Structures are given as C-alpha cells and as structure tokens.
Image (cartoon, rainbow, N blue to C red; front, top):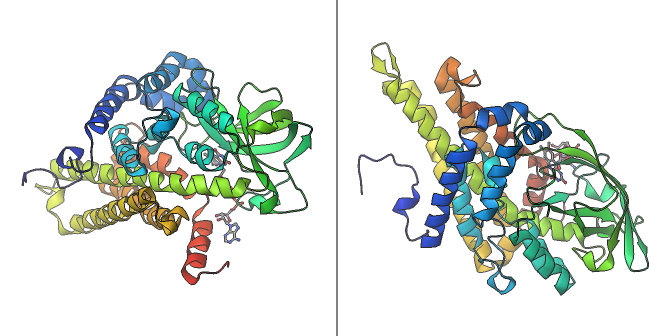
Length: 414
Ligand SMILES: Cc1cc2nc3c(=O)[nH]c(=O)nc-3n(C[C@H](O)[C@H](O)[C@H](O)COP(=O)(O)OP(=O)(O)OC[C@H]3O[C@@H](n4cnc5c(N)ncnc54)[C@H](O)[C@@H]3O)c2cc1C
C-alpha cells in the first residue's frame, strides 16, 4: 500500500475488478477525452446543442466518431449477439472513471453505456430479427435515445395522449414528445429511438407500447431546442412531434401494453450505471477540493489545515465511499440475476444515495473554492460538473423513486 497516495479509488489498485480489456478501454477513453473534449470543452459548453454541433462540427462529430471507432457502443450486448458482453459492474466502473477524467457525467453518456436500449431489446423485443438488427446497428455506431415524456403527463406516463393505431401490418404513431435528450442526428447517420405511445387509449400504463424508430423516418418533426443550464453540448434536447410516423409491426420494442414495463426494466439497469457516474462526480470533487485547499495559503497556512475545512471534506468522503459501496452492490446483484435487483430495488437505493451526494459534493467543493468557483473559467471544472450533474434530479425524479422504494419496503402498491 502506498501511504503517500491519495486515498480515493484508483483502478490501478483494483485488478480484481478490472480486466485487461477494461484497462485498455480506459486508456482509449483518456486519449479521446484529451484529444477532443478537454481542449474544446469551454466552447462546446458555451455554444451548446445544435450550435455546438454546427459551429464546431469537426469537433462534435470527431469526438463521437472516435468513440464509435474505438468500440465503445453496445458494450453490454451479449456475445451471442455479436457484442463484447460486458457486465453491468464492468460498464459502470468504467463510467465512473470516464466521468472523473472528463469532469462531467455527460461525457460518459456520449460513450454510450449501452443501456437501457440493450436491456429492452434483449428482454422485451418480440421479433428476433428486429432484435439482432438493432444490436448490429448499435455496434455499428447507431446511438439510441428514449422518447417517453409527453408534455402533458410528465412522470405520470399513464396519462399520455400520444397514440399508436394499428393499420394492417403497421402502426401509425402520433403525438408530442418533449425534453428528448441527445436526439440530434447521430455521427454516422444510424441514430435510432425507442418511442413510448398508447396502443389502447382506454387504459393507463397497461395501454402503453414501445416502438423502434429510425431517425430518418418521415414524420419525425423536430421543434424548439432547449437552452439548458447544464449538459448543454452533449444533449441537444428537443420538443418533437410524431406526425403519422409509420412503423412495421415487426419493430415493436415491447409486446403491446408492456411498453412501460420494458422501459422501467431498462431504466432500472441504467440507474445503477448512472449512480456510478455520480460516484465519479463525488470522487472528482474531493480531488479538486484537496488540490485547492492544500495549495492555497490563507493566514500563513494551507487552507486544509483549518479544522472547519476538515468537516465538509470528511463528509464528502463518507458519502462517496458509501455511494461506491452500495452502487457496487447494486451492479453485482444485478449481474448475478438477484430478483430484487432485477426489480430495481438496489439500483434505486444506490441512485438515491449517490446522486444527491454528487450534487452536494459539488456544492461543498464550490464553497471551499471561494470566488473562483463561481467564475465559469476559473471554477472549471467544478462549476461545469455541478451544472451537468443536475440531470441526476431528473429521470424518474426523486419523489417517484421514493414512492417506489416505500412501496417496496411495505410490499404493496402505494
Ligand atoms: C435535459 C433533459 C433531458 C431529458 N431527456 C429525456 C429523454 O431523453 N427522454 C424522455 O423521455 N424524457 C426526457 N426528459 C424528461 C424527464 O424525464 C422529465 O422531465 C421527468 O420525467 C419529469 O417529468 P416532468 O418534468 O414533466 O415533471 P412533472 O411530471 O411535472 O413532475 C414535477 C415534480 O412533481 C413530482 N410529482 C409528480 N407526481 C407526484 C406524485 N404522485 N407524488 C410525489 N411527487 C410527484 C415529480 O417527482 C417532480 O419532482 C429530459 C428532461 C430534461 C430536462
């Protein structure tokens, strides 16, 4: 054990968790981050969304193309479907490190953790040919986004208006979708989507069905683009309208009426991975704070020597270690096929620990860095990490996660 080394998780110290292939992927990720992200991150963040894509198209597409070429897409696709078959834990450990290297969880999203689309195709898509086609499309560089949220129903998916009406061998999809993240045209033109709509408007959640859509499908209308506080460049996010989009029956991503179950299953797995991104944020914040407080002299002493500074740093560390422990447990249990983990219990417990801890770590870090943290460039990377991590308050939203956990605890629907 190196007693002089910072006591924060380092993959080099954990060969029991990291395979040679994972170490190699981490090296590749570091190279990509250093070549494409770090020199351009300020401009990408300032411009955001479509402006970043168009005014810095060489960088934007160069970054994504190098991720695809290095084989990052579809890491969890099983070997029998042509993928490398990484476990959730392997994928997630790498996610935490990519987040740390790039100082934002959004960068890891660009590395496409392969979820929730892979889980949905694998477990829910009825047509075997469609499943194989979209696994291949993913491995070839087809990024998948999820189009679920309807502006009028929000987290209450059963209240959605958008519909899919059967017409012979096809369905006709209509309806609005808002806040659709990362759904700009993909870097190699193979972008595809999973869209949730009602096939039975007399029902609530059991009337929802999930469909596979190609980006080039006629009838996908992109409207206003959002101007986000964080996750600005990687997440061009739109208001969309589906207008008579035709989908063959073969491209049902879930059986009729099972769309929300499929989506929740995919999201459950995804949340464990997102929790590891949050762990990466917490650990990166601790490192940054230690750098600053050890190198900054006030009243003739480095700031780290003052007792009042020890308390927030120690709290950050407690939260980061607890987050890593529960998140590792969530991933391991998922990989082992534990029934409760498959229902989402551990992923959500882990996410509810790791996500608020990450935001709190950024805030504490910002406080300890003083004025510098508030200036965009001087506060780099803490202020960006904080803004980009705000996405952790979304997904199913904290209250809905808590509602699920309370129901799980008392073993009845609340
Ligand atoms: C940057 C960004 C990217 C996004 N990406 C995507 C995407 O790719 N795909 C996609 O489908 N969606 C996406 N979304 C949408 C996101 O998932 C939704 O914003 C989220 O699900 C919440 O819906 P809402 O904002 O309509 O909140 P609302 O449904 O209006 O809820 C508001 C608040 O009320 C609380 N609440 C509601 N009902 C209850 C209740 N019964 N009990 C307790 N509390 C309750 C919620 O927890 C929430 O905190 C994105 C949003 C943003 C901002």
